[in-house]
Length: 536
Ligand SMILES: Cc1cc2nc3c(=O)[nH]c(=O)nc-3n(C[C@H](O)[C@H](O)[C@H](O)COP(=O)(O)OP(=O)(O)OC[C@H]3O[C@@H](n4cnc5c(N)ncnc54)[C@H](O)[C@@H]3O)c2cc1C
Ligand SMILES: *[C@@H]1O[C@H](CO)[C@@H](O)[C@H](O)[C@H]1NC(C)=O
Ligand SMILES: *[C@@H]1O[C@H](CO)[C@@H](O)[C@H](O)[C@H]1NC(C)=O
Ligand SMILES: *[C@@H]1O[C@H](CO)[C@@H](O)[C@H](O)[C@H]1NC(C)=O
Ligand SMILES: *[C@@H]1O[C@H](CO)[C@@H](O)[C@H](O)[C@H]1NC(C)=O
Image (cartoon, rainbow, N blue to C red):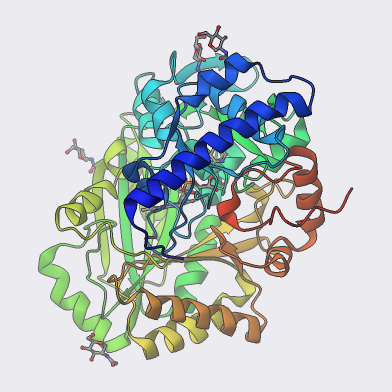
């Protein structure tokens, strides 16, 4: 996967390729009806880049493990540029691959395009004409924001806050693009109550794999709407998404409770997420959970929380039990509810089976809470520890199999290998907050868990983590635990068809309909252009 090449030869090769690419596009007009005007091609020809720096950025991602080299990087200044690019591939006798690089925070090359063209969405972020985030109100759906797919969630937060509003469903980390998270699902501690981010979209503008600009929603072009949400970039480019907004709270009560017993921990998590009405005042606003282990620092990069003075007693508890489970919840409040928030939390936490005395609280602003991972990132960056390999594994696990998972994976594989230092997240979600007609693949049960192994490794040790990841997947398969990968990383059509299960046929049909020449997001490794799709 890694290529070594003398730069100069490579650049020349690239130049030839680009020239070919444009020539191919030029030829198209002789091959087919002149769909593209000569002028349009010229408009975009200057937007291809092949300098070593551009190629280098497009061939790496947050994972730092997979490297696929594109022939060119495309820097659009408008949505029309992207449509022109896709059309030129679609109409070509030999279409080229196109991937969208949102912020490159995938971990397995999902936003790369080997020998194809990588669209650098950051370029659109910088030079998009007009306002990229508009806040409005509709009598039927209430407040919403129209947001460019290339925008970062942190910018969506800041822009909507100016109106006293914000989206309700988030990811833990906000320096991700709207198009990138909506192509997966977008999950965090709010998902149990508000659903993933894909459940909070009213409408989208999409450029399909045919280069067509299509507005889709629950009322219009529903098939495309549902295909694109969780669609791994396979059906079109999310140019605009209409995101639901709610009035923002002012501050957040943030609580962590420690458990040594996994079954008590999950029982409490499940009880808490059963109170989940969107308008239900007594519900929590956020619920997650994580493992604390010997190898992991008590305060990790995802947030420093526990007071230093308490580290010794937490550490000795970890030594005693090998693994502790940390339940993490939050309740939002404002001036009106400030007086009652503590009481409400007290009522919610009554009867929970955490270890007495291991109860920690913070009182922070809403923005500080949502952006909690950022300070850890900046610290790691300053130490040169952010751009290291990230052999991540993210899974969805049915509720009835989570105890088996704990004993087989956390207590056995992980303790045996003794390399896990990064955060390991564990929290449940309610399936009824998801829409199964969307492309995202989730387990069949009413409640399922997400488990995230968010490893950072050395440049020479990532293989040990990948070996552990493989062992975990093999264990699940042997034990009949029906895991689904989130941010999936599969290599064969058989694995993909297993991943989608009953939805695979629909997924294929949608690919045939919206990207029949299999141009988009090749880095996901779902379709191979050499193989033609069966007709539907
Ligand atoms: C530090 C960190 C924390 C994270 N935390 C969370 C979390 O809490 N919850 C969560 O759900 N995920 C989380 N993620 C995962 C993240 O949501 C995915 O990796 C996502 O794909 C990254 O977004 P991106 O904008 O960088 O997308 P990229 O990696 O650039 O792209 C991902 C895929 O989406 C496609 N794509 C990108 N833009 C568009 C578009 N406009 N239209 C159509 N397709 C497009 C790409 O072609 C590619 O296939 C985290 C990742 C990191 C690195
Ligand atoms: C290409 O550029 C010309 C001149 O600036 C403009 O008139 C035309 O509309 C552009 N075409 C597209 C598809 O943007
Ligand atoms: C925001 O509104 C302006 C003016 O109507 C429009 O030009 C722009 O495209 C809108 N942006 C989005 C992302 O919808
Ligand atoms: C939370 O902190 C704010 C700011 O420091 C303070 O004004 C407020 O009284 C605190 N509220 C609670 C409920 O602890
Ligand atoms: C795990 O590894 C650490 C250091 O990497 C070591 O100190 C510890 O003894 C190991 N634990 C076990 C159970 O092997």
